Structures are given as C-alpha cells and as structure tokens.
Length: 156
Image (cartoon, rainbow, N blue to C red; front, side, top):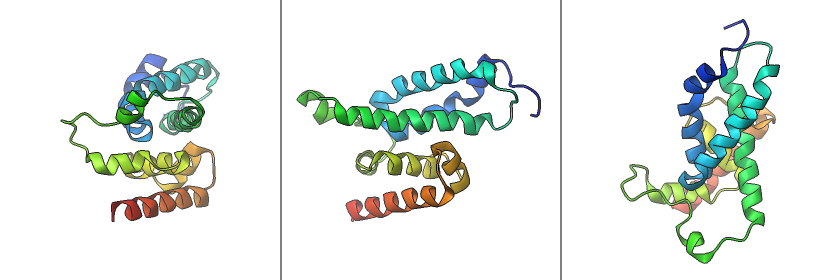
C-alpha cells in the first residue's frame, strides 16, 4: 500500500480486532473498551493529516500503547472503591485465559505489561515493539525480559 490511507471506516474495520486484543492484555477487560475508544478517537483526529497508508498497523499500535500506559499512570493517581479493587480486571469465570497468569501480567509495571502484550499477544518483533512504544529496540527487549523474569518469579 503506497498511496494515501484508505477511508477511516476501512482502516477501523481492518485493525479493530488486533487493537482490541492488545488492549485486553494491556489494560484488562474492564478498561479495554474505554482505551479502545480513546485510541480510535485519537487516530480519527490525526487521520486527515496522514500522507501515506503504509504501516498503519504500527501507527495505531503506537497510539494504543500510549493510551494503555497513560491509563495505568492515571489509575495509580485515582482512588478506587474497595468493591472495585477486589474485582477489577478479573477475567470472566468462563474466560479461556489462565486467570492466575493474567492476574500476574496485570501486576507488571505499565511499560513491561505493554511490552509483554506486544510480544506474546500480538507476536511483534522487538523493533516493532520499540516503534509502538516510542523507544529503542534495546529498551523493548529490556522491558519484555524484565516483565518475563518477574512473571516467572511470581509463578514459581
């Protein structure tokens, strides 16, 4: 794809599943919808300024990554009622995902959590993770490595 970007509705349809899967892993089921909306609203605002349609998947994942990190940062500053603190981010009982594993993933620091989600949920390369997170490839490797080390320690 070397011309201009496709119509926004086509872009949305083509990338919504990937972005939503990433956000489920990055922010949890309870907040994925809000982050999804924020991601595509930001994309909609910036879309008219795009000059070409190349690498739109990387572009939207970069926006989603920043929204996920911003979500975690703002959540730390906000008070949470006790009833929500007990049940926040838990997968539904019928969810096929391993509840114990995902509870540990949710406990990772934001950048590690986002990097691990990119690597193991979306199967992204370290270069793609670095681009999405706005950092270096070494930083992406470090975040994934530290996140995985922490998960292994917690799961042991």
